[in-house]
Length: 164
Ligand code: 5GP
Image (cartoon, rainbow, N blue to C red):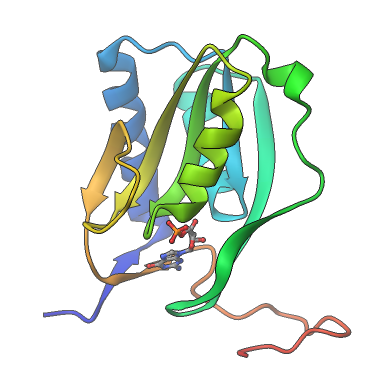
Protein backbone atom coordinates (compact mmCIF):
# COMPACT_ATOMS: atom_id res chain seq x y z
CA UNK A 1 0.00 0.00 0.00
CA UNK A 2 1.28 3.50 -0.88
CA UNK A 3 2.81 5.41 2.04
CA UNK A 4 1.32 8.67 0.85
CA UNK A 5 -1.76 9.95 -0.85
CA UNK A 6 -0.95 11.77 -4.11
CA UNK A 7 -3.16 14.58 -5.38
CA UNK A 8 -1.90 15.36 -8.87
CA UNK A 9 -3.06 18.45 -10.77
CA UNK A 10 -5.24 16.22 -12.93
CA UNK A 11 -6.89 14.55 -9.95
CA UNK A 12 -7.37 17.93 -8.28
CA UNK A 13 -9.33 19.04 -11.37
CA UNK A 14 -11.94 16.33 -10.89
CA UNK A 15 -11.80 16.48 -7.06
CA UNK A 16 -12.65 20.19 -7.01
CA UNK A 17 -15.53 19.72 -9.49
CA UNK A 18 -16.94 16.88 -7.38
CA UNK A 19 -16.60 18.95 -4.20
CA UNK A 20 -18.43 21.84 -5.88
CA UNK A 21 -21.18 19.47 -6.98
CA UNK A 22 -21.64 18.29 -3.35
CA UNK A 23 -21.96 21.90 -2.17
CA UNK A 24 -24.41 22.84 -4.93
CA UNK A 25 -26.50 19.70 -4.36
CA UNK A 26 -26.75 20.49 -0.64
CA UNK A 27 -28.46 23.78 -1.52
CA UNK A 28 -25.84 25.94 0.25
CA UNK A 29 -25.29 29.19 -1.63
CA UNK A 30 -22.30 30.96 -0.08
CA UNK A 31 -21.99 34.74 -0.42
CA UNK A 32 -18.24 34.43 -0.20
CA UNK A 33 -15.45 31.91 -0.04
CA UNK A 34 -12.77 32.29 2.60
CA UNK A 35 -9.62 30.45 1.62
CA UNK A 36 -6.93 29.40 4.05
CA UNK A 37 -3.55 30.22 2.54
CA UNK A 38 -1.69 28.80 1.07
CA UNK A 39 -3.11 25.40 0.10
CA UNK A 40 -6.72 26.54 0.39
CA UNK A 41 -6.17 29.19 -2.30
CA UNK A 42 -6.21 26.54 -5.02
CA UNK A 43 -9.35 24.96 -3.61
CA UNK A 44 -11.10 28.31 -3.20
CA UNK A 45 -10.23 29.40 -6.74
CA UNK A 46 -11.56 26.18 -8.27
CA UNK A 47 -14.73 26.28 -6.12
CA UNK A 48 -15.20 29.96 -6.92
CA UNK A 49 -15.38 29.19 -10.63
CA UNK A 50 -17.44 26.01 -10.25
CA UNK A 51 -19.99 27.66 -7.90
CA UNK A 52 -19.90 31.01 -9.71
CA UNK A 53 -18.80 32.88 -6.57
CA UNK A 54 -16.52 35.84 -7.27
CA UNK A 55 -16.20 37.11 -3.72
CA UNK A 56 -13.04 35.40 -2.46
CA UNK A 57 -11.16 36.24 0.74
CA UNK A 58 -7.95 34.94 2.24
CA UNK A 59 -6.90 34.10 5.75
CA UNK A 60 -3.26 33.29 6.21
CA UNK A 61 -2.62 30.61 8.82
CA UNK A 62 0.68 28.88 9.52
CA UNK A 63 0.81 25.59 11.42
CA UNK A 64 2.94 23.03 9.61
CA UNK A 65 6.66 23.48 9.00
CA UNK A 66 7.29 20.09 7.36
CA UNK A 67 5.93 16.56 7.03
CA UNK A 68 4.07 15.99 10.33
CA UNK A 69 6.05 18.87 11.91
CA UNK A 70 3.82 21.47 13.50
CA UNK A 71 4.05 24.61 15.56
CA UNK A 72 2.38 24.32 19.00
CA UNK A 73 -0.62 26.27 17.76
CA UNK A 74 -1.78 27.57 14.37
CA UNK A 75 -0.81 31.22 13.96
CA UNK A 76 -2.79 33.82 11.99
CA UNK A 77 -0.47 35.90 9.85
CA UNK A 78 -1.40 39.32 8.48
CA UNK A 79 -3.43 40.55 6.74
CA UNK A 80 -6.35 39.42 8.93
CA UNK A 81 -9.69 39.53 7.03
CA UNK A 82 -11.74 42.60 7.75
CA UNK A 83 -14.69 41.54 9.92
CA UNK A 84 -16.83 44.18 8.15
CA UNK A 85 -16.38 42.33 4.84
CA UNK A 86 -17.66 39.11 6.39
CA UNK A 87 -20.49 40.56 8.48
CA UNK A 88 -23.79 38.75 8.04
CA UNK A 89 -22.52 36.61 5.15
CA UNK A 90 -22.97 32.94 4.37
CA UNK A 91 -19.36 31.81 4.24
CA UNK A 92 -17.70 28.77 2.70
CA UNK A 93 -14.27 28.13 4.21
CA UNK A 94 -12.02 26.29 1.73
CA UNK A 95 -8.86 24.40 2.59
CA UNK A 96 -6.81 21.54 1.21
CA UNK A 97 -6.97 19.25 4.25
CA UNK A 98 -8.38 19.04 7.75
CA UNK A 99 -5.62 17.13 9.52
CA UNK A 100 -5.76 17.85 13.26
CA UNK A 101 -8.49 20.32 12.31
CA UNK A 102 -6.86 23.01 14.49
CA UNK A 103 -6.47 25.43 11.58
CA UNK A 104 -10.08 25.08 10.45
CA UNK A 105 -11.31 25.36 14.03
CA UNK A 106 -9.44 28.63 14.44
CA UNK A 107 -10.89 30.03 11.20
CA UNK A 108 -14.39 28.72 11.90
CA UNK A 109 -14.34 30.28 15.41
CA UNK A 110 -13.11 33.57 13.92
CA UNK A 111 -16.00 33.51 11.43
CA UNK A 112 -18.64 32.46 13.95
CA UNK A 113 -18.29 35.80 15.70
CA UNK A 114 -19.12 37.76 12.55
CA UNK A 115 -21.02 35.80 9.93
CA UNK A 116 -24.56 34.45 9.41
CA UNK A 117 -23.45 30.89 8.61
CA UNK A 118 -20.17 29.13 8.06
CA UNK A 119 -19.52 25.76 6.41
CA UNK A 120 -16.20 24.12 5.54
CA UNK A 121 -15.11 22.38 2.35
CA UNK A 122 -11.88 20.38 2.12
CA UNK A 123 -10.38 18.03 -0.39
CA UNK A 124 -9.25 15.66 2.39
CA UNK A 125 -10.26 15.07 5.99
CA UNK A 126 -8.28 12.86 8.34
CA UNK A 127 -10.07 10.64 10.86
CA UNK A 128 -8.71 12.46 13.94
CA UNK A 129 -9.75 15.96 12.80
CA UNK A 130 -11.41 17.93 15.58
CA UNK A 131 -13.57 19.67 12.97
CA UNK A 132 -16.07 17.71 10.89
CA UNK A 133 -16.25 19.50 7.57
CA UNK A 134 -19.61 19.69 5.83
CA UNK A 135 -18.02 18.90 2.45
CA UNK A 136 -15.19 16.37 2.07
CA UNK A 137 -13.99 14.87 -1.19
CA UNK A 138 -11.91 12.05 0.27
CA UNK A 139 -10.85 10.70 3.68
CA UNK A 140 -7.37 9.40 4.49
CA UNK A 141 -5.01 9.01 7.44
CA UNK A 142 -1.90 9.23 5.22
CA UNK A 143 0.31 12.22 4.59
CA UNK A 144 -0.86 13.84 1.35
CA UNK A 145 1.40 15.12 -1.40
CA UNK A 146 -0.42 18.05 -2.98
CA UNK A 147 0.45 19.06 -6.54
CA UNK A 148 1.25 22.63 -5.40
CA UNK A 149 3.73 21.70 -2.69
CA UNK A 150 5.14 18.37 -3.89
CA UNK A 151 8.21 20.04 -5.36
CA UNK A 152 10.66 22.33 -3.55
CA UNK A 153 10.67 26.07 -4.37
CA UNK A 154 12.73 27.02 -7.41
CA UNK A 155 14.54 29.71 -5.41
CA UNK A 156 15.93 29.97 -1.92
CA UNK A 157 14.77 33.20 -0.30
CA UNK A 158 17.11 35.14 1.95
CA UNK A 159 16.72 34.19 5.59
CA UNK A 160 14.77 31.01 4.88
CA UNK A 161 16.12 27.51 5.21
CA UNK A 162 14.76 25.02 2.69
CA UNK A 163 13.87 21.47 3.70
CA UNK A 164 14.15 22.40 7.37
P1 5GP B 1 -4.45 21.04 10.57
O1 5GP B 1 -4.56 22.35 11.28
O2 5GP B 1 -5.81 20.51 10.17
O3 5GP B 1 -3.66 20.02 11.37
O4 5GP B 1 -3.60 21.25 9.25
C1 5GP B 1 -3.87 22.28 8.38
C2 5GP B 1 -2.80 22.52 7.34
O5 5GP B 1 -1.61 21.75 7.53
C3 5GP B 1 -3.28 22.14 5.97
O6 5GP B 1 -4.02 23.20 5.39
C4 5GP B 1 -1.97 21.87 5.23
O7 5GP B 1 -1.39 23.08 4.78
C5 5GP B 1 -1.08 21.27 6.30
N1 5GP B 1 -1.18 19.80 6.27
C6 5GP B 1 -1.80 19.01 7.17
N2 5GP B 1 -1.75 17.72 6.80
C7 5GP B 1 -1.09 17.68 5.62
C8 5GP B 1 -0.74 16.61 4.72
O8 5GP B 1 -1.05 15.42 4.89
N3 5GP B 1 -0.02 16.98 3.61
C9 5GP B 1 0.34 18.27 3.36
N4 5GP B 1 1.04 18.52 2.24
N5 5GP B 1 0.01 19.31 4.18
C10 5GP B 1 -0.71 19.01 5.29
